[in-house]
Image 1 (cartoon, one colour):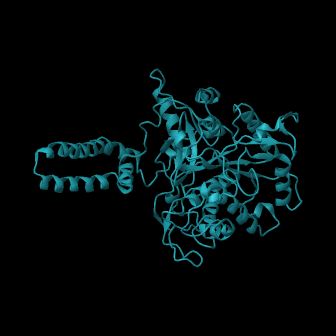
Image 2: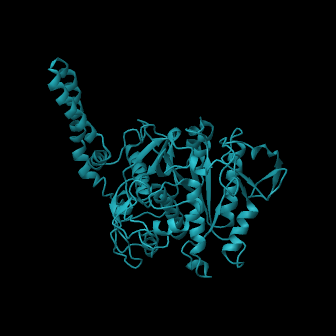
Image 3: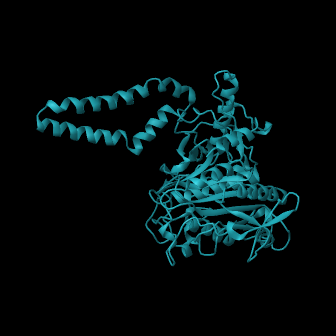
Length: 484
C-alpha cells in the first residue's frame, strides 16, 4: 500500500500543454462562481452546523419533557434531519459551498488525472502562488471532462414507457463518459480544455451530439439498450460492467456504416480484454497483442495493420469488497498516458472514476437529474454547461465496488507498445495479483510478456493466468456480480 509515494516520486511538474490559465476555467452550474461561492462559504457552514446542533440540543433537552411532547418533537426532528441529509439537500449544500476541497487536497499528494500529473503541495514553505496555480490547473482539467447524468423528458425508449433513466441508468451514463473521453483524446488531444469563449470547437460539439438522448444520436442510451439486448440490457434494469462493455462492442460494430476510417462515429478499434467469452470466471484477463492487431485490421477492413484502439478491461476484484491487493495496481493505472479511468463506484451506484490522490479516487457522478439537452452537431454556440461540472467528489479506493472496468486509449502502434510495456511491468510488480497480463499470442502452456519497446520478451510460468480473482460457482449467472 506504499505505492502512493511511488506515484508522487514519478510525477513531473507537468507538460507545458497542460498548464492552462485559471481565467479560462469554465464554471459548473452546480457550484457557481468561485468568487460568489467564497463569500457565501463563510456563512453557510455555520448555518448547517448550527442547524444540526439545534437538533442535537433538542434531543438532549427533550428527555425531561412529557412523552407526548417528546414523541411529537422527535418525529419533527427526524423528518427535518432526513430532509437535511437527503441527496437533494446535499446537492444544495454543494452548490452553495462549491468544490469539496476539505479532504481533497489536504494530504498534499500528487493527483493523477487520466494520465496527467498535478502536483498539489501543502508544504507551508512552498510558494502559495505556485500551489494555487496547481490547484487551478487540476480543477480546470477535471471540469473539462464530459459529464453524463440522468436525464428526463426524452423520447420513449423502444417499446417501454420510460422517458427518463433516473435510478437505473448510471452504468450507461458512466460508460458514455468513458467513451466520450476516448473521443476527446482522439480528436482534440489530452491537453484540450473547455473555455467559455464562443464559437466552440466543432469536434467537441460533434462529440456531444453523438451522446444525445434520442435514436438519432449514435451513442444514446436508446441505441445502447438496443445493442445490448443479447446481454439482458433493458430500460429500467440494472446492468454490470461486463455486459456494458460487450454492449458497446456490439453498438460500435452496428454503427460502422462507412469504409472511410475518419468518418466513423467511433474512429478506433475496440477490444474487450476478457478472461473468456462468457465473462470473468476467475483468473487475470490476458491482453493478446495478436488479438489487438486483428481488431485493428478488421476495423480498417484490411486497409491498415494498425489503427487507434480503445481497450476495455472488465474485472471482478473481490466478493463484497475489493481485495486490497489490487488497489496499488489500480492506482498506478492512472499514471498511464493511455488511461481512460474506471467504470465503477460504490455498490449499487456506478460512477466514472477519473483520478487518484493517495488513497482516494475522484469521480464524476451521473446521479444528477437534468432535463434533456440534445446538442446539434453544427451548433457552435450551444449551451453545454450541463455536460460539465467542477464539484470535486472523492471516495476511498478501498470502497470501490469490486466489479469494475478499466479503459485505455492508444493512438497508434507506438502508443500501444508503450502501454504494453507499462502494463507488463505493472503485472510483474503486482506481487502475484495482476489486474491483467500481456502476451504476444495465444499459448496453451505459457504467457510471453512482451517488452513492446525493444521487441524482446521472456517466458514465465502460466500461474499468472490462473490467479483467481473471485470463486464463482459453475453455471452462476453473471448478473450475480453485476451492479448498477
